[in-house]
Length: 338
Image (tube, rainbow, N blue to C red; front, side):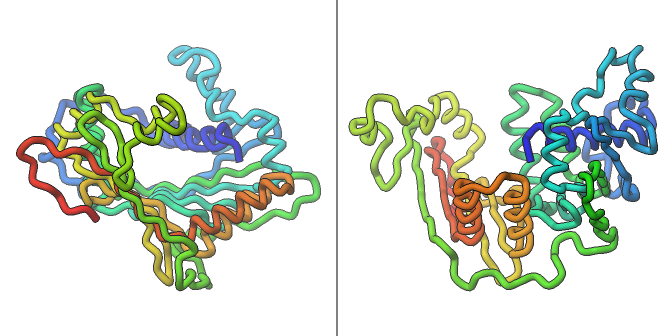
């Protein structure tokens, strides 16, 4: 499915909240420490966004165009253009028999179901959300000021939100309707999950080290040395500006790791900063198969499609560890690499 379509579906969630909630009046500033996350809970029943053949959505029977008329004095005309789907992509969706897409925001993560089938999902917990908030504040304060600090305060509240958004697409002629997923069904596990491969399909273990100038080294060989063979500055995209290295040192970011964890029940792809994990992508065998089937279903048969399908299957079963190490700031205590 195209990026335009997924962007539209994500922004449809904004439309949903606008329609189902009330306007909030500005409140006096309050320190995060004075407010407990347990004081906030927002869990809504499943809500439905229905698209017609022209790509216009409606919710509770109210079309986006009708809502735009109401918002015109405040937001101007065509203010909800981002939730519409171009007819070209709508035809693509119908041809691929994508009948409904469900997005579930739950305390354990953000889950996606297409035609009731579970896709790989974004998982989080207290620790990973706290780490994401810390990084947001460290790197965002210089550019966004209080906005970055506010994001850090808001991230722990993600586990207190429950949204179930069902996006219904128009059916192609002659298509048999596919039932919705039961709202009571498990989000993280699929019934009858096949066991993951006992051995990884591939093993990749790499460590890249940056020096003070922002030049990367792999196995002791610098990008500059490789450029003697490939041509001047051909690896420019792998280098860091000295100012970026200074920022990493100031924040004491010593290393970033990308790792997979393979078990007999589920697999996951983690990003760790100084050994602390961020929200991560998770899947089991059926999640992976569902995603690959959807990819094949949404594209015309070709050798390219088959090659991508096999490549993604192998990546989904690979044992991956990639660590990017940065130079230590003066006086910093080294943090163990995962």
